[in-house]
Length: 534
Length: 50
Image (cartoon, rainbow over all chains, first blue to last red):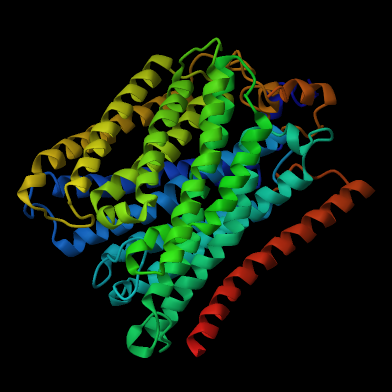
């Protein structure tokens, strides 16, 4: 263990700024990671509140609570907040906390840029959320911002566009920081194929971010010029093409889906070996599978828009390339299963969430395969089946991955062990209610209920009621999670440096909580070899 | 502004080379991102001229 690992508790406080300056001027990767996680936690409750509003309105047919315009604003803002304000910043927070510790670096390569990319976010979301209070209300054209509908947005339109630019800038700066940290700050001896899977998944995610976030920014810039400067990129009346926006948007949008899931793959690949007390099965295959998924994500975008009309050859290409993604994804699922095979399994909350991830994300994957088939997609397009599909991917996939990561590393961050019983309760309540919430939406979609409507035909009532009850239960369960985290941060049983018996990796060589400046002396080759037992 | 970057030690030759590498690659990736941004706008302009 290096001298950093032996650092006594005084080092936790040495050279650490105090008060508001510690956070506003933060350049320490742990502080910035904490700020990202707290920010995304706040946004989770904001976006969750929008979701509860949507499900309350849909509890029964007819208009109950909101007018249709406001309902559309809720669906739009729910999507934007959850994607850009919750899932992405959570993963960036986890990256900030864990990557330097896992690669044996003292900090991120560009600490001040790190501070800047975080502090952009509160401004972006203040701008976006304040659009509820301007004439015409918040954007209501869907998070996909398709023209010409979105071009009809009122005074909130420039707020939407500017906040998207800010979020994009924050993500790109964060991604640059992640790549240069991993490529330049690894401890001597930490070769690429010794890196933990979480670091690998983030390295590939960061490349995706740099390639596609500017594309989204370009698309919304063109919308801005269409709206205010007389261009007609996407306006049919002026010779423009609204479908071109969809192509550009989904060239960003599909890799974006993988940006939101690849880090979760990395997290699950860390947790399953720990609680199976076995090395990860097929480490290199897992790395290549993530890279293959990332590559394929660039050539499947049009499966989101089969029904706009495209040549048969294009339909076939996008159908088959989409189905091809099942191959590397299958490699990952089977490798996780093989890791558990004959393992000495235990089921603490991180493992429970990781297992739920494997099962439930697979459901989302299978419904994705159904949607990939062109003739079937013509039936499913814009129905609740699609809503069920992407919520299985993003809630029981990405969000459960984040929850698993928090349960896995929280004792390391705080130095306190949390209440395992409470965590298990949170797991079961979340898992039961999330399925009550989203599984019936498959039936609704197959029966023909369209998405993004505030009212529906009476034959859809029963499953909508069930789904809404699931939403209320899932939402309430998250207060248990919040309580558990606050309780753990405030105190509890001291956590060892190696919190989990089967854990490997450099982060477990550091004290819990780790010193403010970890790995100021790089870890020795022996420590790296011990940590890198995949 | 307090320096909490953990990089206060004087830079050795290897360190300054690493700093250069970090700066260079950060600028390269920023240029790639800018190229995607302007490239897609340029593609849309070219397409609208056809």
